[in-house]
Length: 330
Image 1: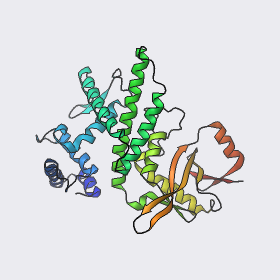
Image 2 (image 1 turned 135 degrees about the vertical axis):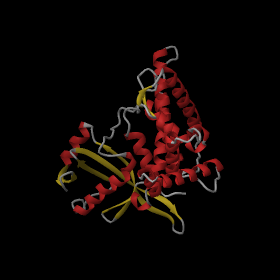
Image 3 (image 1 turned 45 degrees about the horizontal axis):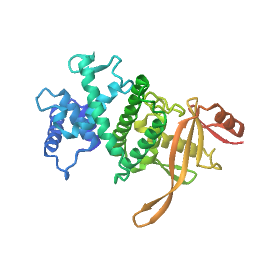
Image 4 (image 1 turned 30 degrees about the vertical axis):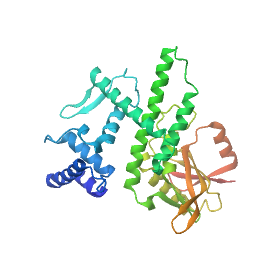
């Protein structure tokens, strides 16, 4: 298995021999499909991109099972803003740049996404996954679908029913996309990149944290929970663990938060007010039994006017640096 550094190096260098060696080795393993020699998510993406750009006829994405997630992600990102098929859709084509997709291509792609949604729904409906990440994302997806079910219209209202079905498919596909994203994130970073320190306490950003934040507070375009607050470009979900770690440790280093509870951190970053909620949890650790730890539960921009009013009534805003300010009790 190649390290992420090797994969990134292969993607950045003009060393054809090195790129060809990495690509060829991953292709050999993809053909063998040996569970004892698994292909990482980063390797899968590198290999898939190579298939699309290779001048040699070595197959299509559909020929290799390891390319399934990449094909889904690539297709989903074309249609996620409107799954109705009624908009204009564009995709990058080799040698042609960005081109408008034909009605036939749109129909084919949406049929593919519909098939992915059906397959993924059967997975998220399972309630006892052994994989921790999948267990969290499945539970979050089922809960979101239950909320949508409450607004299901009478089938005689065709337009409303069509909109409902599109919303439902959106939720399912978004869940699948977030799962694929999370696989890459937890594969990329070391354990220490998910732990922050504040007031002499370790705070973990784990699989639950990421799933909860992605599902409830990201991608307003595809989410139908419009009562939620959504994030903006200042916080990239693909490196959110590092960004929150940096924020929390800058707060800790300032000393301004020394006498405050770590379970609710309110701060301003680049002029926008945010909240981080942290709870004490228990987990089993080999050789230690059950141990307590702090886990980031959620993180979001505070947009509710009443919540902001209470914050400014009970707290004062203290400056840490030009970008970051922290709320502390008056």
